[in-house]
Length: 177
Image (tube, rainbow, N blue to C red; front, side, top):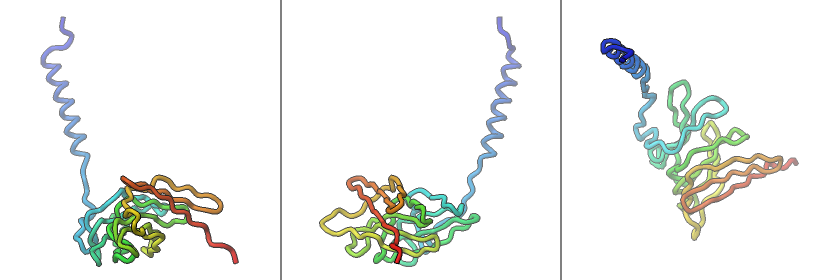
């Protein structure tokens, strides 16, 4: 014996379809910004939510010099904080990581002293310090992301990994004078 009639089954199907339509209509995508090359192009790596609550990231190319940018998304507005100029790196190629000092660390595919990539530190205001430039015959830096950040009392170590390279950068805090 059938417990539910045809009319009941049809009504249940319409209720389910209606609920799905209501749910899917509630899911919308809002475009926050469109890059126009002058402010960067081809965002690369994941966005990082920093301790200030804002989202930070890099673009592979574009910006004032064409070598990529460092940007922030605050209150729905995208602002370019730094345009790479090849001397400080070119083509940022991995997600950033924020260290305990509040600064961000990342890698570039090219640029730097030997045009083979850099490891850089950048403040939330966009001030860049090149920490390392790849030196021939070493491979260019092709970081695919930072693996971990370890903070100790004397040294902060950042480890990055790429398809064929791994590296570790250790930075000792300034000595008291």
